[in-house]
Length: 284
Length: 293
Image (cartoon, rainbow over the protein chains, first blue to last red):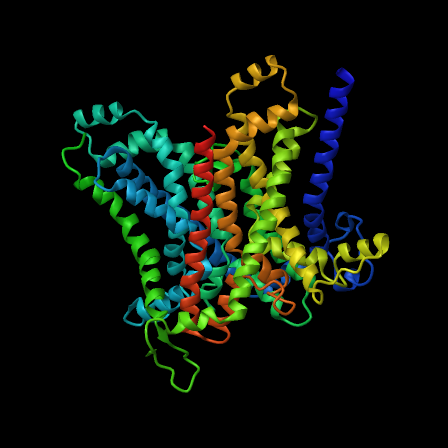
């Protein structure tokens, strides 16, 4: 029995080792490509870690210092950060309303916010493109190709799961605490500042990190709703496909840079990512 | 506890307004445009009304569009089959303890947070002819030529493999969360009754996991029916029509040919089919789950 168990353990470890290699190998190759000159990439693929000796920094400096990609990077940072802040604020307010008030129809409102997340973005490309460029107009200002347009749009995809995540947490804060504060004469802002935000802080952090990540990663709508000024890093990445004679090194470098937030946040949100992706239907 | 609901509605209103403007208005707008013949690049670039069903009648005989829907469904089912199978095995294996478990699990989570477009780039760099190591390795060790730029089947299966690489972790982690939350009593009584591991798995684990399985299948189908980014990066929908999924087809019709009216009708049908498939699946699985209780 003991030998059989040991054998099982070895087999599982072996399976997971193979899996880890399969997961990491393509990413490792991308790192290799991003640190090599076009000449070094020519011919048979060399899998040895040459970046330990020599890094071809031009792959990074060319797009991000000399090129347009620094603008894309700034746009991405602004859009994702503002969206995360906006989504967290709005979701906190909405969740508190759904949790503490007996609003008629609040169940349907809750369900309706969910359906917004389910819809395929490709079906909304055209109407959003037309609305942004011709209908949503304030004088000369249109939402098309602006950061504010993207920031507002991403709320549609981020609010539903933010509300899901926060609802469980705010429902868990006893109502008696609110009531005690109201008796003491506190208004709604005091309740938020002194009670809800401190107690829900971990949930708020996870919500804003995941919102940031989704906004940072979104590609399809960003590429159809921007043309010059508000382009984000993912749309810049797709520009490599159409150009003839792709510079693989630069492309790998841009892809690597756009992966950085994901890598930074991975260990912070790892525990919550399942709950985030399944709208809390399955707890991680 | 508050004397009136005004504060509640006030707190909720910004969310509702944004979702109305950015979610509901576009839906009704695309429904509206779908009733018109509208191509800004045509001789007459204005919107023309030709009867309510004009675009929809055209779509029913549009073989390329119908083929793209069939392709999307096929792709979703194939990837779901592999991801569910692999994910279940991995989730079960994570229940036992083995060396370096948390490290393996952490690495397994990594693909989940990478942007789809970056996954497309990673696979492009990894598999493209003349640069990627995969075609070389396959050629050297198995004598197999991988060139998905020319071979339609290879292109389709390359996308399937990429999707499995990207989303199996999601299935694994969700099923693991479900498995760890299962009550232990049924297992103990089954063991006392002398059931073997296989019987326990079929008659206890699977039925108890039905609610979690529904969630996983539901979300995975929804997501793989909307796939665009990775495919666009890796194959651009080609070669020919081999990887032209519905989302990519709509994009090409709308932004390359500028068929606004027809594209809107496609969007509506696409939305409708996505909802119907998931609703059908959901009701079938929920009623089956009830019968077994």
